[in-house]
Each structure stands twice: as C-alpha cells, then as structure tokens.
View 1: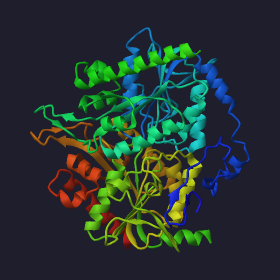
View 2: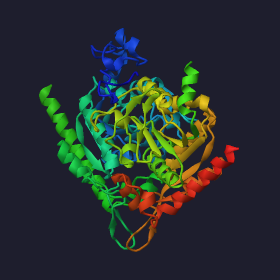
View 3: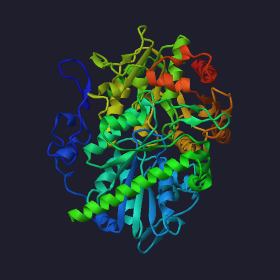
View 4: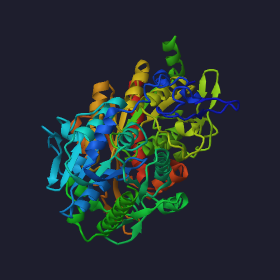
Length: 327
Length: 271
C-alpha cells in the first residue's frame, strides 16, 4: 500500500507528505509508493523556481495581495471576490485587479460581465481585461474559444498557467490584487502560495456557508493556511439565512447545526468578518454580470458586503503600517 | 497480472456511475447520498467511492465519520453503513488521523490513491457503485476515468444548480464526458426553488430552469429538479436517512423520480 499505511492495529491511516522542500522529501514513510518519490529524494525539487524572483519583482507594484479561499465548493468564493473588487474599486483613486485561478471552472468572466472578452498581448505582457479604468480582470476564461471548452488539465499544467498569470500579466501599479481560488487544498493553492512567497500575501479571506458539512471542509482549509503560514484576515459566512420576500419570515435553508461560522471562529480564534444572507438578487446580478452592490444598494446583503469590505480594507491598512515599521 | 487484479475487485459491481459537476457545492455528494439511500430502500446493494480528497463529505452525510477501514486478503474492506451491509463506503475521510486534517496533495499523490481506491477496495457484489467526485475536470477526474477504463462504467450523472454561472461550468463537464467517451445518463438540477414553510411562496433563490435548458441544448436526458429543502440539508448534517424519515417533504418525490429513471435505464442495459 503506498499512501495509506497499516500499523499494527490493522486500521488504515493516511501519512502526510513532508513537502517537496523538506529534508525528509522522498525519504519519509509517507513517500513509499508515491510517484514523485524518486524525484523528491533526488533533491531536484528543493531548488527555488527562478520564477519566484521574477514574480517578486513584478509584485513590487502591487500594494495588497489577498486570497479568497474555501475548502468547499459553491459557497460563494467567486461571488464574494467579484463584489470585493467592485466595492474596492468604488474609490476611483484605487487601482484594483481580480485574478481568477480556478482553471477548470472559471466563473469570474461571466460574473464580471466580461464573457467573450479576449486577452491581448503587448510588449509588456498579457493585458488584462478592464471593467473600468481602475478595475482589471484576468481569467483562463478569456483564453478559451467557446463556453463549452473544457480545460482537462492535470496539476503541472495548471501550475504553469498560474505562474504565467503572475509573471506575464501586465497589471501595472495596483492597490489591491484579489485572487479567487478553486475549492480544496491542492495544486492551485500550493502553487499560488509558493509563487507569492517572496512577494508576501497580506492574507486570506475564507468563505463558508453555515452548515457543518461545509465547515468541516473549511476547517481543513484553515489548517492549510496555518501549515503554509498564510495569515487569515477572517471568515465570511455566506448564504446565512433566507428572508421570504412575501412574508418576511427567515428560514435557515443551510442550518448552522453546529453553531455556524461564529462558533468555528470562536473555537479557532479567528475573526468573523461578517454574515451575508441569501438573496435571490445576488445570483441574478452575477448571472447578468452586474454588481449587486450597485443593483440593489439598500438590501441587507449589500450592507453586510460593504461592512466586510471595509474591515478588509482596515486590515490591509494595518498590515501596511506594520510592514512600514518592520522595514 | 495487473489487469486481472483490476477486474477482480470490481467484477461483482454491475453498474458504476460517476457523479460529476464542473461546479462545487451544487450537491454532488447530496445526490450520491440520497440516491444510494433510495436504492437501498428499493432492495439494491450499493456503494459509494468518494474521490474528493480535499473535501470528503460522504462519511458525515451517512453518519459513518468515526468508522475505520481495515485490510483483508483481497484488499481494503469498505465501511458498511448499516447492519445488513447494503451500503458500503470508501472515502479518504476514514483514513485521516483527525477529521480537520487538511490533505494538501498535488496531483500525482491524488492519482496514486485513486488507483488504489479503484483497484484495491473489496466491494463484493454491488448493484450500483457511485463515484462521488470533486468539482472540475482535473487530476481526480482523468485518473478515475483512466482507472475504470477496463471495466466500462455505466455512465455519468451531472449535477448543476439553476443559475447561469453554474450551468456554464457544467457545459464544460459535458465536454469532458464527450472527450473521454463517458455516457451521460442525465442532468439533475439541484437547489431549484425554495418553498417558504410559513407562507408557501416559492422563491427561486438560484434562479430556475438552467439545468433543463442545458439538457435540451446538449441533447442529453433531464432527470429532474430537486428543490431546496431545509429538511434535506438538516438530514445530511446529522447523517440521517432522509428517504426514510421525510416522505412528505418537497425533495422526496423529486429524488424518487430520479431513482425510477435510473432503475429503468439500468435494467434496459442489463440484457
């Protein structure tokens, strides 16, 4: 048996990968039978990728880098990312960009109203697609010929694409770069953290829905953040209750049976940035490629989005301040 | 020799069905869980192989999260959910030391475990084996289809939610099926409308009709709409048998209808 092992008890357990840069790489008991064992043991993986330095240079022009993460799919990462950039870009003096590294399921082009747009090549790299003068977007969706095109890629190819997005896109000077990720803790996540290691990420915003089935995946994601030393800005609970438009009674469609994000944040000592209720207008705005914040500005959901965005801005300002002191 | 081993453990499985979706959180695991429960009530022997390594939800949904996997001569013994052993499960969730452990693996490691999951689990005799997948069209999907090549899966069920953003990802999954020669059994539209328990007003929180439209557009069967149902989400949270406990609820007839179609499709292919 390669990855799972049987100690004397007869119970199968997973033993964790020591990491390709570890001195244990290719030598620990977890490496037995792993297809990369020989490669890892040879030490070839230990050398830093020269792209990391190039990316660091490029990212000097980017003040704040924020990852939007969640262990679970369909909890609203892309919806949140889209509204975060819309909210940040309302200040016309700020330059904002959104990078979509969900290679197999890019939803950002549609949500930003950019379906069918193409990326152009210039002397200084790939030009992102602009929603407004101060809001740029990049996604693999812009590189596909048809909405039916499937990107059937294994990890290494996805990693190559992410590297290109970071190194070869001509972002220009940015105040905020928001990075929307696919669900899970795999290639895309490891790569983005690795490639941005030298350039420093401000932190991650973790999205969840209230049920335990979602929280159990999100706890894994939080453990991932600790493992790779990625600071957590806070957690957003999405799809938190639904108010019937007719009788105004609230229903818990995704019930917080274990206390929801609030309890999880208390237990793990992390910040709860806020809760966003289910609102049919959010999905509709996303389908139309419009900002919910400007479509239905007075709704409960829009108000809580704004509060959360403000808290993220405050975090970043603090972060900058601390960096200034440390420098 | 490798070939013979591959066929051995899956030789007693009559229909292998992949549950796919380009998008996450649309209800792949929910659909797998409820179909398995409904088929069990129809007297079938069923199994679920959960190849979502970063977010395994199946053990909790079937209230089996504390069980362990053991070894036997022919491989790994799956976890049995009930006394009669009519539902068997395999998931990485059973192999973790702590339930919150993150499985931070790149592709090659996931692929190696998928091969083991497909080849080394001693399923015995099963009428249906559902393979619950993570979102996307990447390592897990390519490896699963590759590993199953010799035993001809029955087909794939695609799950979507109604809104355009989700349907868009499922279109890509259809292309994946076409490219890999996987038959599409049909599309299920999940989270389709919510009926307020207080005033009975139906709100289409995630819009409506996207799944059916896509099925028409792609020329594949549409298996039905499953409404948003707090009783369903509650049952999954607590690992309770929704198909037994809530026959009066909104989602019950929808799931039953899908199972009937599935049984028809499988019996017509049996000849």
